[in-house]
Image 1 (tube, rainbow, N blue to C red):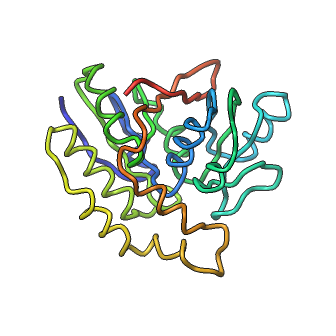
Image 2: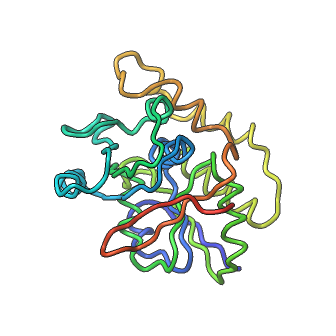
Length: 229
C-alpha cells in the first residue's frame, strides 16, 4: 500500500485512490460527535449557500457549519464539537458546510473513495481502509481555510500514516505540539466566543470512536455515514 501525504485544497484536487480528508479543528470532529449522538447521515457542501438551497428544498433536518468560525445565517448549529455534543440527533440528516474539511471533500473528485479524518476516529479509519486494501491512500491535511497549513491537521496526517504503517506514535507528544500551535490559541480567547475551549478537548482525544466516516456519492451529493472501523 502506497501512502501519500498532502496538504490543502490543491492536493485534495489531485488526491487519488482512497483519500482521507482531515479537518481536526473542527469539521470532522464535529461530524464524528454528530454520528455518536445519533445522526443518520451528513450531506457535505463546500459553499453554505448550496447547503441552504438544498435545505430549502426540504432535504435534511439541520444545517451545521461555519464561515470565519461563525455560524452562517440560516444555519441551526455552528461548526463546534462542543455545541453538537449537547444535541440529540437520533435519526436526523444533517447538512454541513465549512471552509476547510467540506471544501476538501468536494475537491477530491479524483479519489475513488473518501473517508473523513480526525483524531477521534483515527484508528477506526485505518482499520476500515486496511480491510478494503487499496493500492494507494492519499492523506490530505486541509489546514486553515484550505489555504494555510495547520499544525493539528498536519500532525493528524502523520499520525494516521504511522498507525497505517503499524507504528505506535506517542499521542500525548503529538497533542502537546498541537496545544502549543498558533491555531489552538483562539479557542482560549474570550474575544472569540465562537471557539469553545471544549472544542480542543474533544478534538484531541485519540480513537474516542470505533467507527469511520465514509463518503458515498449519491445523485450528485456527497453523503457521509458511519462505517465499521
